[in-house]
Image 1 (cartoon, protein in one colour):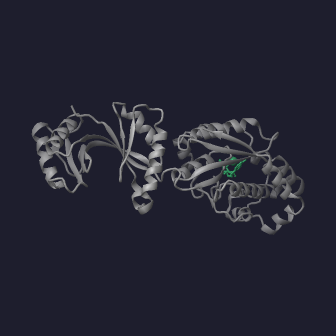
Image 2: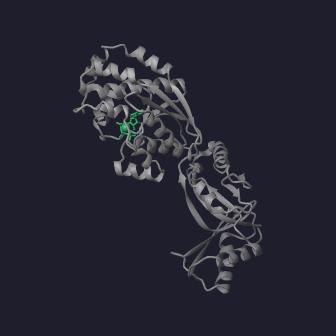
Image 3: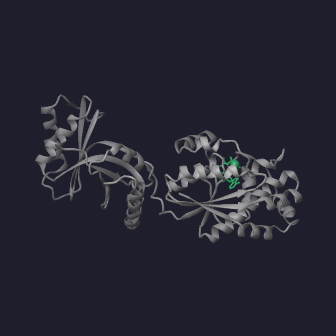
Length: 386
Ligand code: ATP
Ligand code: MG
């Protein structure tokens, strides 16, 4: 009896990557092994243009669902493998299609093994009549209920009807590393996820202002990162003591400039830590126009403190779109837990939406922020979330 014994993993975008492809496949294969480490009995096989997971009798559903979180996978098919033998292909096709529900079918054949003695067309014209003769199914080439796919490769022939979409993007680890600014809100975990999907590993930096902000925020961050562990199994979180800097700002600048200056300090700290941790970019959950500090003019004045590129995956997304992602990655319910953030605690009644760089610099001259920044960097607390 024939049964589905493999999951075929397709890469999609990877195929455009030419000579890097080998590395990509290697990294993806490691990520797949890691994602499936709780399942015993499986085997991961790397091939030039696909990866195969040998089920060895395991139930496929939880495995497919786990693999759907792994970035760099375009699609997953549940496949049955037979020898490159037309009789085997015929009988397996018939047996598998009989298990399906529907009235119409189409056979789609792909032959990458050019030594196989039948062409794709010939295979179709051999398999389809067998199905017509032995079932009540009718052919519908445009909109079939069942699409039976047959792929003849060097090592064997794969037959399948079920394909599941993957997360897309690139395998985590091929895109380098970003220093990601994680608050506790809705946007920054989503931004982190979007980066991970592009293959970028993240380290997180969080600015904490005890006693104004509570320890509960840290637990919230840990809960958020546990959700993100689905995509990156180990995440480093740097907690930067921000209280003294924040107090110095409030002592030396008018209320309307506090947020601007605070964010300039955050970016200074993030840039320094990024360099230390060998991250070539910083990232954040900022979204254009969302709040006073995220108008283009504010972003310009804030970003002026660093020449490191800042990636803002949520930059042009509506809040509703961001929320949709947050729900998909299951961070939404954690993000909306009430908490005091260093941004909310001192929120001025009228923050500047169009701050001036000269003025910001003037206010900063009034205190020795460089040494406060050094001190904060020397007192970072690091946590590993895995
Ligand atoms: P989020 O929902 O992610 O908190 P937000 O809408 O609350 O975003 P802001 O509070 O203005 O927006 O923050 C914009 C971005 O700045 C955040 O997405 C995050 O990347 C970064 N950020 C804000 N506060 C902190 C913090 N305390 N520590 C680290 N990063 C922060
Ligand atoms: Mg916030």
